[in-house]
Length: 497
Figure (cartoon, rainbow, N blue to C red):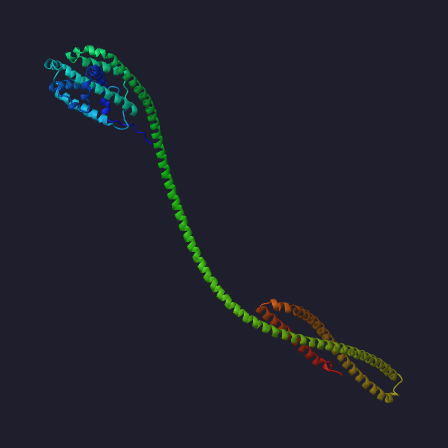
């Protein structure tokens, strides 16, 4: 906030010395006012052009007085001015405008009668000096009253003129000397002027006091104004600095705001792109899930149908398993019976072999006996050769038969031994194979029910094929055993009641 110095009207600078000069002239004319009180009311500032008309003399003296006032004004025009003090009344007064018009009229009359001197006027109009002097006194009294009013107004409004009391008194003395030298008219009334010196002195002292007060006020106001100017200057600099700081901060804030807005726009655009991309991905994922859902529904339907088929097939497999189990049980019973028969055949074969051994032993003993008999027959001689020839022939025949029987028995024994070995090997292998098959069948039969519930279709089919293969191999094995029994000993398969 800038504090501007007050500006006053320019006419106040010219009024101050003029009023000081007029105050002296007005104080000089106060005795005339006391002597001639009836003329005072005729010469007011408002109607000085309409008063009594002493024709040429009054106008010339008025012009002379005005010339003296204006000359004093020119001498003290710049008196008391300062660089930092201005007279700025708060509001112009109507009386000031009237006085300004009066002074302008006086100035115009001075320009028209500048060539005249007071002595020419005194010699030309000596008979009417008294009347002219009374009129001038009235004017000066009026001007003095105006000066007091203006001083009061100046004090009330803004007394800022720096006028010292010494300079103001010197100005008043100069105006008094100048006005006292204006002609013999004032010399004629010197006694009257001397009688009024006391009043003038009182007026001057009063005015000096007023001026002193105004000077003190002006000094105080000047100091205050200088302080205010300094503070104003500091405040102005501070305001400028703050304005620059504010501008810098505004620029920085605008740049930061633009940068932040740009970042937000970029982030928003990035989020929008990411959002659109994510939405597209989600749409694609939703479509894929819908397709998968459709496929899964189709698969569920197909699996339901397959499950039903597998249930039916499992039921068939269960039935076939039961049939196979029954057949296996029958085969096991048959195997037990065959093993019993084989055991009986083995016992019978053992008995036959023992009987054959006994027979062979008997035949061997008989052969030895025959050989001994033959030797005994050959010792006695030939006499008995004819009778013993028949016995020998019969013995030899019997020996040959026995030898053939021995060979046959040996061959049969060898064959029976081979058959026994074959049967023992077959029985051993059959026992091992059947034990393995039974163990695998029992294990699979035990876990088949659990596997059917948890196994898939392929596993069930594989298990079924494996079971069918096992059954097929068992069937082949049983067929081979039956064929072997039929080839070697069919009587084993005979059922005896």
